[in-house]
Length: 115
Image (tube, rainbow, N blue to C red; front, side, top):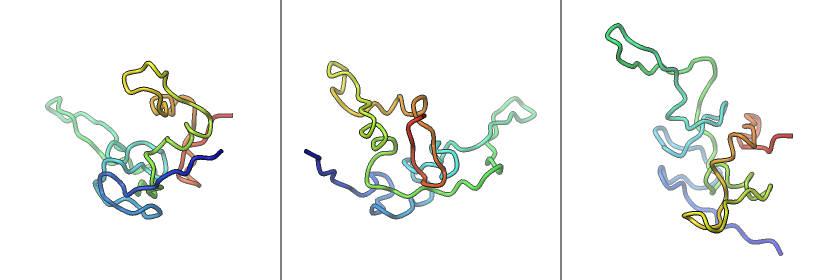
């Protein structure tokens, strides 16, 4: 029996499913790399040893489309990647394992299990 998934607005920028996240949204992923868009930058050090954050211009970031679910949940569910029931939050999608078990596909702007 298949469970119906309730799609919701983005918890940060409040866009409806099927729409691109708004600028500055914490949930938005870089549509090229899959990294959190707010952290898709290069780190450099200035003359005083301070950190400068420089936009990574090697690709066009742009926010991904909000699907109605947190990024990575779908690939976890499709591949049965869940946390142990005795974990602090109980049995849920193992989002921490997504970067090591999946790759970001920029064409579909979503995670896919590694082959």
